[in-house]
Length: 603
Image (cartoon, rainbow, N blue to C red):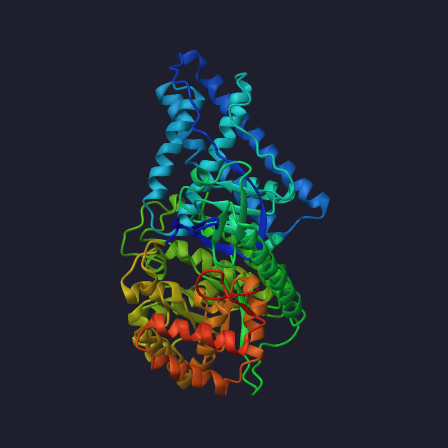
């Protein structure tokens, strides 16, 4: 469980979190802790209200200049990774979010509060709202807003002559950064200052810190409870991004062991990386397309860099965040066109808006709990039509596939088809260039959809199984990392049978079946997914090389034997142990025995 710690005699203290960027490094810790600001509460006379609002606007402008400066320095230094620039763009948009600007101005104007106190009240309300959400994606967005608030406090402090109240990140090259959380700008600054690893108390696998760490190849561990209390400045630490653990005050023996593992992992990564141009095809001729999951169009270049073939999941929710109003058709069209152009000639599955339930987006107003994803879109046709029109217009720029989330009935798909026809008719009448014949896919994320996959297959051009949500709803568990591991194990026989129903339905209908959840990223599951008959696997870009290597070296006949052996196991835990043993036996150079526990994969 995240935050657990153990100590063996003469060995270091092991703290367990979640690994989100692989690698093993050793270094001295530097703690980064944003202490709570002591903000003065001042009631202003009416005559000073407009001046105070102007002071707040000046802080916003200075924060924007700071982000622009970092953006330019990245470009000029040759470090303009697509993820970095995309995250800075989104971070800059957050500055103008009505939850910061609008509410803070309202507190100043209506309650005559000083800007610092008004901003603090805004941040407390935002923190409470986002912390109540179970979806990690939206929790991360809440953290982004709070980080922006801290920078605004910094510039407000400067304007009042109290500069220095908010610390600035400064690191020595090779140090291990330990923090509660990081903003995109701080994570990028840390990577540019030569940090060797990042350890955070919060964050998600798809959050900005994880994305940045993976893009620059430094290990990162998140969800490590009370890390800033358990690790001191200057403490010697080992960070294992494979297994999500750190070792504080390691022994010489541990340093030697982890050093050997780190060197071996680098050697394996170099060897596997040479195969990036090769197809993911088994020795007996079964080919699987390996695609990637992305959030930003500027990430597209990393797909090819890691040997992927297109985008299996492009999320569109970020377009609706950090803004007062939903994005326009033109704004969406530009983003979709960019990702399609950058991914040619490979396909891009763009998922339509997935909000609602606990995924609240302020620009969309209140979203009823039961209306998530496609249900929400069908209940808000004007909003949905805008997105569909943008998609059809962008389709001229590449190989677009429209992916519909949270599908449960054939009727929902037919409704979407009618809306697509309406969108096409509108564009045609307006003389706007577009493509009307775009493939449509259904995400299989709820048990009802999996059990009725044969009915859904008649309505779509492909399936994409979202194993994260499908597993969650099948096992009746939450998204929280505190959920017992055995309830998150995808080798549960009931879950495997559900996956088999989906692939069988796809095969019977002659449509490809993809998988885009976390299960696809794990090399241990590759033989099982081969046996189940998946045609496409979509994963984080960094996962592609090793998964491809396992596929290229596993005959499908062997995979079928492994799958049937897994089905004979008495429990999912036993099945997982068997798969780990199988990997160690058949691909020992790709797998390293852990110092404690099961093996890890030397990506």
